[in-house]
Length: 46
Image 1: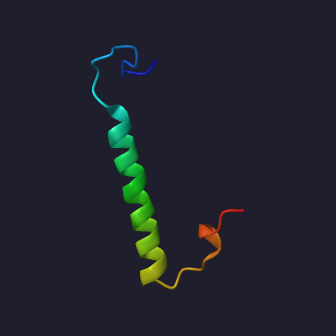
Image 2 (image 1 turned 60 degrees about the vertical axis):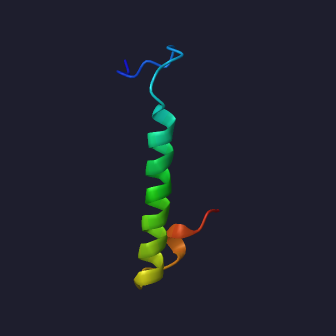
Image 3 (image 1 turned 180 degrees about the vertical axis):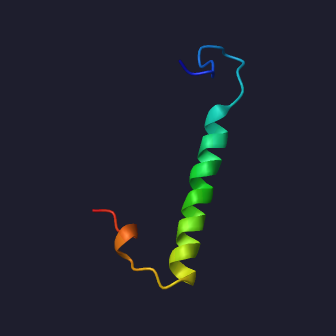
């Protein structure tokens, strides 16, 4: 069972932290792609 309580109306905004992590990971993967010689294949969405 999750330790986060999603049923409380006045709970902390967990989604904001998760969205921040997603944006940071997108920025990091884009930086790795642009600044290194890694191939484009892992970044393609098919």
